[in-house]
Length: 265
View 1 (tube, one colour):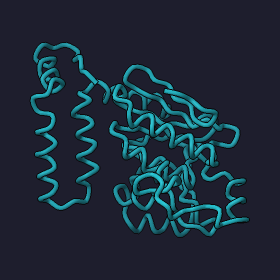
View 2 (cartoon, helix red, strand yellow):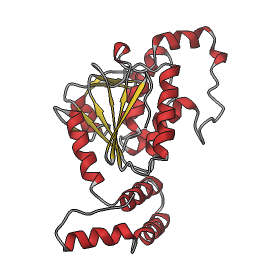
View 3 (cartoon, helix red, strand yellow):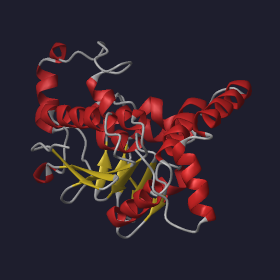
């Protein structure tokens, strides 16, 4: 895995740690950062050896949202930004840097601290699990600038929060704390050391069969909100895809033999 001056990527066995690397700007999102995240997602989509990903931000914050200089350039020339063209499947670049984490085959855990505002808030929603320091601050901040959330948030928020909460926070752009984020479903859990906790969870995931983990992620993503018949069929198809495979047999044998499993990626 490679690194750039906007994103660093470190692999430790089956766990890959991705760090937003613009600490002097609280990891604000400029064009270079967006492209670096997209490049990282492309690498990870092909990384069979990676069983879990941890995403965090360097410095004092996870991500403060859109870079103000980039925002100013958009205001001066709105037509210079093509929001409508789909450049990454069903998404544009802005949306892809959030939804792309959900599209990865392996689970993603975000470790949050400082702030997750605007685009940073939407990026964190793309993760499977979100661990936050107790003093982290959050905001769906686009309304402050007369804008709407446009980085995949509307595709991701319905699975984690009630509609009235999403409406309130979107309309007001209010800043809320980690305990509220946990209560409302935006955060999975709080931890004094969120990166350490995220890496702990990643290690637990990486110790399971990569076949069943990837199948489970697909199953959850594909069936969330689907009707009963489609969900039951998807369960059956997913189970058939892993049952009797080498890694599934290894999971059974290692349990019977009371030893650590040796899975193949």
